[in-house]
Image 1: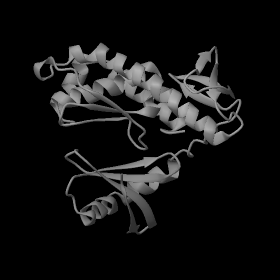
Image 2: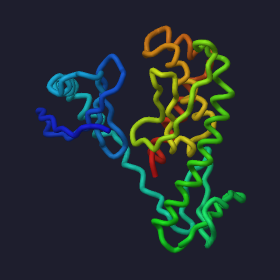
Image 3: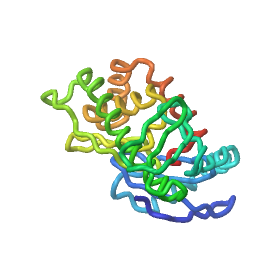
Length: 239
């Protein structure tokens, strides 16, 4: 979870989220809708982050001026459109026991105890999505981890988490966390995030050796990264 702060610049006062990560350097992001997030190494004083943002206030002002609008929430009612593995599906809730939901063509026939209740539909959708994500992500880790020289060839454990601002992360204990909502992106984008996090288990940074490993394992990762950014611009990270 991030901490909320405000920074005063010559252009005005901006609210932003400060998130501590295992990264080695400071970074500043502007997301669709104008949400500002700073990421910093653990232990970085908030005053240091504030100074970092002020140094980049010109870039920040331009990024905010050109930020696309936040994607509209699709909703959780009959006919609502959601992405799934890069294609659009329409929700078709009906009375039934959760767990029996299936995709038929471009429709997700969602079994819900109260199909007319948007909150119940959302709970059923999230449950179905989590099952789908777990199966797909495990399969993609199986596909890619043999190509990366991890210690003792040990397959990393997977955790699926609903995250608001990143697609994946990894643990110093050798595990991989993937965002539940990543299952909404095209498979090539899922593979990019999987490989990115697996490579971090070998190279725990974003230096030259990390990028060299990415180039070796997935030569077209930059194109996949751009495709994921396009998906995020259209749909956001979470619905």
